[in-house]
Image 1 (cartoon, rainbow, N blue to C red):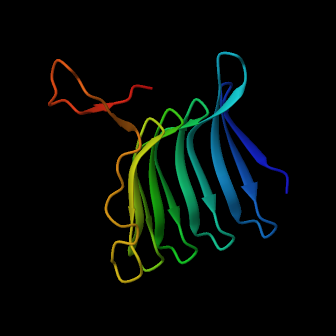
Image 2: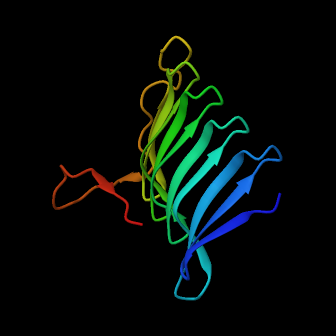
Length: 153
């Protein structure tokens, strides 16, 4: 089906796409930027054919920004990610369809810092929390007690 475009004003529109049965697939908000190009901006929502949500994500100036959530077809929450300026920033978590944690990761400005996972019984499947990837161990000669210094991006 051809997408339906709803113009809110000269700088804002919403694009709606539908399945053949008429159910909404997605609603995406756009704004006209200073270069007169349409950028995704605001809430972007997608649904399964039966009307249940698949994904809900916020965008700012075409980039992911804020919390996005995903759901299984059954309606139970599958995952949650935090974004800032188009990069993962903060906790990312995934659950199985019964709501048990599967994995968690922590990001800082798109850089994976740590992650952990669990098996079906709730036991740690990835071992101990992984050593942070984005932290470099540096010796500071003037202050040897400072060993972990975040790497600047």
